[in-house]
Image 1 (cartoon, rainbow, N blue to C red):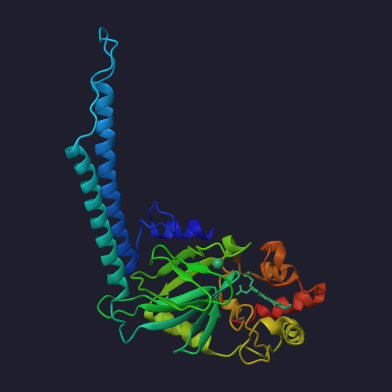
Image 2: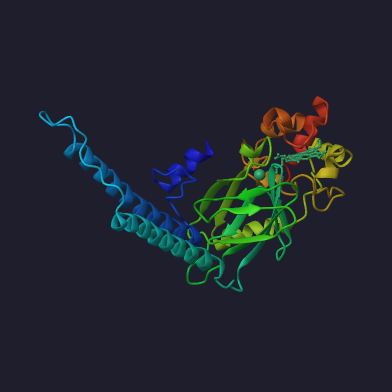
Amino acid sequence: MSSLHVTAATGTLFSPTSIFDPAGTPSHSIFGLSMLILGVTFAIFLIVGGLLLYALLRYRVHPGDSEREPPQIYGSTQIELSWTVIPILIVVMLFLTTTRVILGTESIPKPKQALDVTVIGHQFWWEYRYPGLGVATANELHIPVSDPSQPTPAYLTMSSADVAHSFWVPRLAGKMDVIPNRVNVMWMDPKEPGLYLGQCAQYCGTQHAKMLLRVYADSPADFAKWVEQQKQPAVTSFPGNAAATEGQRVFLHSACINCHAVAGTVANGRFGPDLTHLASRETLASGPIPNNAENLRKWIEDPNAMKPGSLMPAMHLNDHELDVITAYLTQLH
Ligand SMILES: [Cu+2]
């Protein structure tokens, strides 16, 4: 559903994860490089295919041809030299242009006003922290649109809490592995506001396929508003909403708090996504599930029914507990 929406919004034939529809500086240079390599290899294909076709047609058997094999040529230094040297030159040229694009992306000095985000890959979700802003969230990354005259690229400092993952949002930047005990850095600078989709690109376990990436590029004003809201501790009083009040009590007395954090309460687990502003997210469980009360209740009842192999256990809550915890979590804007 969301993929169709984005395709319609960009008004192109491209899928929302197409490498042929770049929307940021690193992805533009990768696109240029891909087109050069496609061009060179396509020219080689045309020349080789053309010569083959010519030889097939020109030298096919004609009526009246003798049955004898034509004279065979063994070895030609000239031909051998040319088909060794020319491919080497082509490979060297592709190597140098690729190196130039990689170094050009990695060596650009980081502007002072760049935004720092810490990205931590988990089986099977993304943790995002904004050290300069005091914001912690999960699964939906918000960054500002970067105005070319005053660039505000987002620098992602990435590591993994468990196995190797890979961060890939094709319309914004290249692919970067997310590896335990190692820090990798990449940057992105979307020029147009919008939602950019991606996917964990390294097989990381059973739910790898549902470890999606959602990058929201907000206008500077929208981004400031988002940060302001995410900095707040969670709502803790729900006047007139008895279900949410009770739900908070049940939640804070259950094992949920060993794995989940809700800022401003005793819940400070880090094994699962931060839930402080869960209701401000559009999806659940790293992208695949639209965030609404019905899905939230189903998720808490049995996460493995929606994402088999997910590392959140079913907590065997009764219907009433499920109702009130859902009522509570839907209030965490
Ligand atoms: Cu992964």
